[in-house]
Image 1 (cartoon, helix red, strand yellow):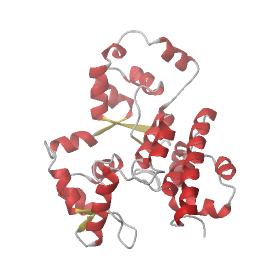
Image 2: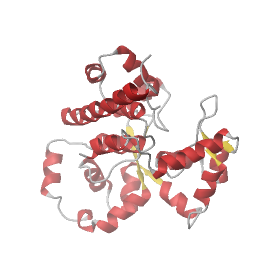
Image 3: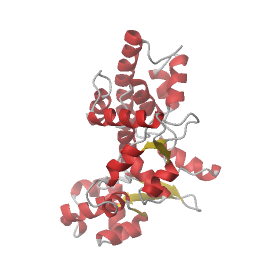
Length: 284
């Protein structure tokens, strides 16, 4: 029950080390000792997309946003990242991505068809996506994870597929959207201990009908909508491509929907309990 455990971790009164570190970063940002994303990326020697990936993965933690809502990064946080052994090469290696099955397969020393099979069977989870000019989804993978997989499971890189994989492929399975959503939601939940924000993350991946059933109070739905995370970096702006990408953001299989719904119910119980005890966050 990984998802429920992740949700439950943020519903108590305790705050973990990362949240405390985030608070320190936030305090520094408020004091003015912070920079915007473009400046932070430059100081870490990263491109815009590399920096966005570092933030997504929790490698670089944002402080409190500027009054206009833009993310800010405390200099203490940038110093912490620079102090890690192997900087900057090790940092770039952690955020390096490859796009598509051809490039991913070449990195692992296998053909694109075998790589697609591994990814469709859920053996390898994408870290992002982009929509090409043909409105097809191009999945992005962390290069470090592909190398680790090749070293850890060499038996899957040659020979016949395991029986469970053959059954999945015979049934037309493609778990790439689902494994991406699982990673995406897990990373978002890891950024906050606020129960209303955690509930908003889980509501954002559920169909609207499920959210209405779980949250019959319109005032609560307004709160969750206001706290909903923005689309991930790289989400297209062109309407036709955005429509394709939007489908990736919502759970589809019934068992996946049930899984996130259970997590949302659990998170809402904690959020409503907080509202009753403190009144700090919730409908007005």
